Structures are given as structure tokens and as C-alpha cells.
Length: 394
Image 1 (cartoon, one colour):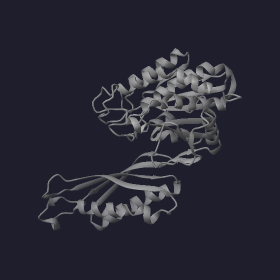
Image 2: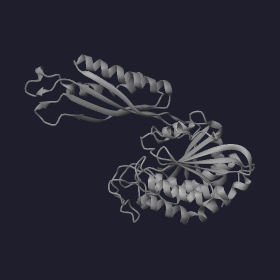
Image 3: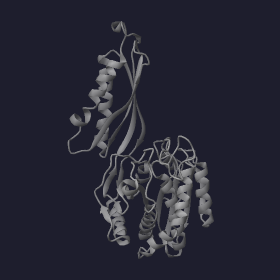
Image 4: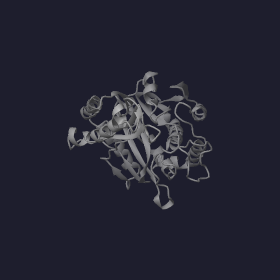
């Protein structure tokens, strides 16, 4: 066993205890006060310089090496989701309606374990590590706000790394893609406003429900008719609200959904066609329309050279591991804001065990993962950092 993985395995009781504590006490985005307090306490116990209150609850710590060199940022997200847990686990959420359904409890525990692994090895490092514990990854813009509040300054990172436990894959599989890995995404909010009236006298009303039906059908042709077939893209209307009574034509209909793409030009096409079709149908049906674009995150694009280095670390740690080098997902991640002008690598660590029922998808009420992935993920993140900050990568 590689010495770094052996060290991570020895720390497993520490990692597991933290993860289960975070899981029992989940906190939503920008409300991670308890979690951030534990993170800051653990980092200070290592003698690190710690900064708190960034983007409300974010925590940043620096580990200084013995000599000058590059700065590596490693990000770990902390927030939970507004989902009622149904796992029945002994460490299940104690907060009704809130649970860690995406693995961020594991990410935070991994980050603190990485801090311990690197603090012990700091005398052999050149440069420094900037550990970033981020709030509000789940669609609330936590990374962008941290960037706005200076997380990329003083010192500015030369590299940026992040990981995600991935329940679509078993423990032992790792995904490190060169180039685009996660899609750019935004949510849209469309309001159609007409004139309400009695359902028995439709000609006296201006019906937004009928227009909404046509709009949904038209929008779902954009990908097939406006996007090149070799370019992945998504435009989905996922929520519709209109009316409350079967005999009343409402004044207003609201449609919500998402657009996603890897390519910037394709993404711009989706945005433009969304507006063109919406305003065109509104005019045709004598309605007023408003289109709002919300919660934008750029695509996560891995630096090819850095991705290849991380692939090499995986193979050095686990020669038998399955390394996926071409995995892409239309899911989005706001870590992209920290990788805009900095060479970065975002990688996936398999965390499922179907034989134990630990394979529910992310954001599911029964989501849970195999904790054997925790030391593996910690060793890989620490190893990737050390590869950049030591001569021998060990």
C-alpha cells in the first residue's frame, strides 16, 4: 500500500467520525455555522492560519511549505439540501427536512483529513496549500461569492483542485477528464401574463395556460433543431405553475427550467433561442412575457496537463484502479468560478456499493455512500497536491 494511502487509512476513524457528525447536523447554504465552526477548530488545532466568515460561512486556511513555490487551492463544499432523509442510518439527519444528499459531509471530512496529511508533510513541501471550505454550492452561488470576497487573492493560486464523491460509480473507479468535465448551467424563470376570466367564456380572457403549452413544446425543439448534433446540450422545462381552479382562466403562468452546455457558443444559442421563442409565442397569443436568467455557473473545464498529472497520481496510488479519462456530465458545479483563469482539475471518486444498498443517486432521500471512499479520496487529493509541491510527489 502506498504510504500516503496508508496514512489516510490510519486517519479513517477521524474522517468517519467527522463525516457522521456533519451528516447528523446538516445545514443549508450560507447557514453552515456549526459546520464552519468545527472546520475552523480542527484547522486551528493544526496550528494553521485560518480565516472565517468569507461568503458568510466560508473558511480558508493556509499550509505553508518549507520553501517558496506554487500555491495550490483545494476546495471542499459544506452545504446540505432541503430534502427529508429516508436512509434509516444510525447517523441520519437530526434536522427534519434537511439532509446531506450529495456527499458534501464527506467532502468536508475529506478536506480536514487532507489538512492533517499535508500539515505533517509541510516540511517537505515548497509553496503552500490554500484549503477552501465553501458554503452554498447547491445553486446559491457560494463559490462566486467567495471569489468576489477575495478567496483567489493573497496569495493567488497557481492551481485549483476539487473532487466529488460519485455514487454512480463503485469504490475503486476514478474519473479525471482532460478538458470539459461538467456543463455550464443556468436556471430560467419565465412569466407569461395575460387576462384572467371564466373558463366558460375563454374568448373574453387572454389565456396564459394555452400559451404555456405551446411554449413548452417549442422550447423542447431547441436542442434538436438549433444545436449541432455533435454538441451536448440540455433545455428542460421542469416546473409549471398556473391557476388553482378548474373553471377559472388564470392571469399568469410561470415556467421554470434549466439550460446546460459545455460549449460557450452553444450555451449562448440556448439563451437566445429561449428568449426568441418565448417572446414570439407571447406576441402570438397576445400575452406579456418576462424571461429571467438565474444562478449561472460556467462549465468546469480541466486543464489537460494538470488532469494528466492527477491521472498519474491515481495510477501511482492504485495501479489496479479503473481510471476514466473521458467522463462528462451535464451536471454543473460552481467550482468553475475558481477555475476561470487558473489551471484546475475537478475529479470524481467512486463511492457506491450496490451490494449494501449504498447506490442511491445524488439528491435522493435515500442517498448514502460507502465510507471506504473517504480515505481513498483524501489520499488522492493530498497526493495530487503533493505532486505539485514536492520534488518526488510523495
